[in-house]
Length: 358
Image (cartoon, rainbow, N blue to C red; front, side, top):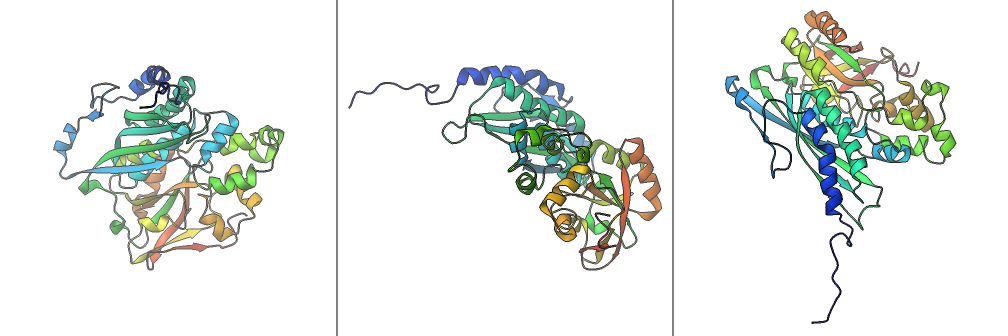
């Protein structure tokens, strides 16, 4: 056999010692998210979580969801701010499973990096921990993986996985939606985590660092990069509070993500009705308007690209709509009456066309 010099794992680009430092750096964040049901501690081969509470349910269902942050991460890397994208990661998962009425129980993350930096990892996982605290779920596991030779040293990507629990008799179900129900929109914080390939192309590409980092009046004093990095709003606690205080009032709900209102609200409809949305009944956040104007999007294209200022739409019994709005306001949510349920075929339709950007 030909004599060869040995090559260590570190020389190949994977630093096990830095990985151990990264684990130490995130321990406090992980512990801050723990619920009483968490069994064991960080470092095991699998995260353990007791579901003993399910024994009191009539028909307990586990609900799972997974998502990422997408190319919004490029904005974080450009600005050098890494402690908010973890909120986006959690939000995209927990808001999805909330559409069934589920309570998020626990969360796992996967972080792939070109070169591991324990301080940067602590910031990223710090954001994930904040998202978990906002939604009341425990961060019980995850993975940090170095990909030398595959990713650039400063590059990283995030994936998240969430599991929740709902009792089938209390599950939100599109089949419960009826003609005459009211559409209540919850305000978004901005673009959330969708449409960033387009937003970056029209808002970031071709601009100097000064242009990207200077405060702009049309963005209410934020820079372009700061406005694009506003984290996704997490709706779990206010919506579940409504479910507790006004039981049965919410028939179904739609998380408005990629595809906008047009391609998400229909997922909360049965076959025999349409959702009729009144354009112009809610304000468009400055960063959303900025992106749409720079892309010169038509009204129809904007409505199936961005959330346009509405991050979630609740379909509510008309007799309980005011009580739902009051409960949401008490929880700090800004709400809008955006439309109603009418006879149809399971589609989304719009009134006051041309009024979206008014």
